[in-house]
Image (tube, rainbow, N blue to C red):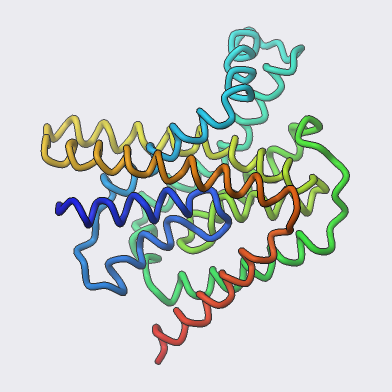
Length: 267
């Protein structure tokens, strides 16, 4: 794959993964609107792995806390903050893994990669995010995350398998409806991305290794590196911005893009 094409994909993924605007939707739009060849699932997952490394680095203190709780969790003990966080992340990941397997086995995942679907989900879930952010009570910090809330957010996260929904956007929406403050909602959404991206990365990585496709592996490594750099910047930008503004700028972007995409799809 040409280097400029890889760079475009990596920058789009890195800059949009942690913003509530749907990175997967933007990746699908690249071939749909530009005529470029579809980058394929291997590159899609590679750039997601790059963003995974970025979020692990940015939230390393939380990641380290969760990792420290895994041994206690494996012994059936949830008596420390680390074990509690690890359990919540596991529970929040189960729905999206099961839904993803169902879509893969039925072939519906490929059927939803259209401009019209992305246009509708951009528009609809942008409006839902606005109402969650604008009208929901927001008193709980991220440290008050519960198993119940993790499961509810996990169900919402599974909806993000529909392209254009935005994994971070839908989990932030759920967290805001559940009463979490803006920075806390974003932090929980970012932490929930880690096991989800890791699972998909391991699956596709195994497929690449099985095919021994060294050219695809090289392209994937380049794309992952570029997306890592872009994602670090996007994370820093969003978390800084949330100290003073709401999610409304992202809502406006989603609604405008959704209207444009629907015009293109049906016009």
